[in-house]
Amino acid sequence: MSSSHSFFKDKRPWSRLKDEVLKAYLVPYLAKVARTRKPIIIADCFAGKGRFDDGEPGSPLIIAEAISHQLSDATSPEIKGVFIEKKYFKELAANVPNSPWLTPLEGGYEDRIEFFIQKYEPRNRNLLLYVDPYGIKSVLFSYFERIQQKGFNSVELLLNLNAFGFLREGCRLLKNPDSETETPDYYEADVNTPERLDEIAGGDYWRRIVDDYYAKRIRMQEAEERFIAQYCERLKKVFHYVVNIPIKAKLNNIPKYRIVYGTNHADGLLLMVDNMNKRWADFRADARNQQSPLFECDFPDPSKQKDCWNIDDKICSYIDCEIGLRELLERLVQDLGISFSTSEYKDHLKKMENDRIVVTRVPPTTATGKQSKSWDHTSKELTIKISRKEQWQPPLL
Ligand SMILES: C[S@@+](CC[C@H](N)C(=O)[O-])C[C@H]1O[C@@H](n2cnc3c(N)ncnc32)[C@H](O)[C@@H]1O
Image 1 (tube, rainbow, N blue to C red):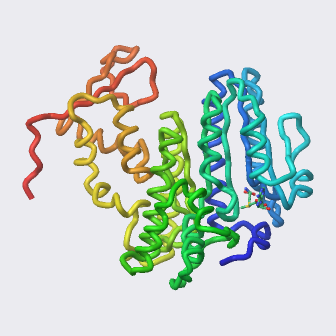
Image 2 (image 1 turned 180 degrees about the vertical axis):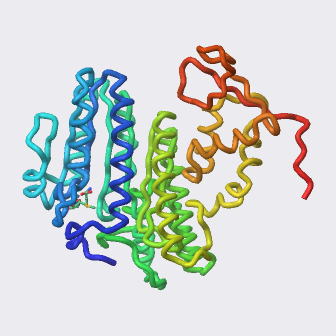
Image 3 (image 1 turned 90 degrees about the vertical axis):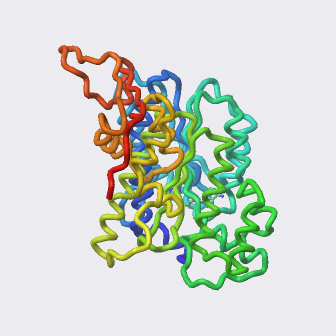
């Protein structure tokens, strides 16, 4: 395990990936949410120093730049960045640009968020929570439930969750020292009780996973996958849509951590899926160049691998009668997470058009009178409906 003291020395490749996900999401998020004309707050809850010791920007500077970019549009509503940091507040305050839109706040996440939940008046604002702790001890599940209940116009969550670190803590607290050799990323080993872990996980389901691990019914890799799947299921009671990306050092390693995203908006979901899928594809391409091509799994969620290999059949299984393209994409990403981008699904649909599926577009022609071939699921002027071709037979091998 790495010491958290060296975190800001230089950026590790997996920290860079996390920044890329944040950066790539912020611009379309702000542009989209600005159209609500309601104020936006981005709360960076574990902000760090603002800048790494080697000069690279940390999350506060990435957020500050995205806010400044959006505010250069004169029609933009008010956007505020709030940065909470306990240990490195001095460095943070020096690094965050002086601006009425940017507020560094000294103190602990727990106190600040408690105050925020109890006293803050949401007044139709949009909130994006970026939660990037070293470990897991401060990240109580109930904070997300309580924030969601406050009545913001929208709430979105981007959480870096050290699921592997959580399970190591679970093993330690249930008095079973972990025996496998790999270690998680930075984490603080000072959760005091299993009950506190229940509060972090939003339930006690993790105890059965740890039991199965110690009974040698599963390995740590599978334990981590089960934990994150169940954590995300719990989070779906808070946010309508939840997806995650595993952040790894090598393709067949246990993830260092997971970036978990929650939203109630399908547009946000599809944007994030494309974003995370791109990071995963880039990581996989690099890993293939550096390692033996014989690795176990090249989809981010091994439990979905079979569906991913048979993606055309999977797509068809969602087309009972007629279904809109947008709804089909939503249902596919809710099931398969970030395994495919929306444009990859569309590539499959294009191949199946007139063969396995029928595509109906309303209006059927473009403004210039040509037959529409559009696959734009975001268009307000066009409806794209898909149905199955009944007489289709799988080709004989
Ligand atoms: C992983 S780092 C954050 C890195 C930052 N998001 C970035 O990209 O540059 C976690 C930060 O949380 C701070 N921290 C740890 N416990 C905290 C707490 N309870 N409240 C607020 N900040 C805390 C640490 O000092 C550290 O700077």
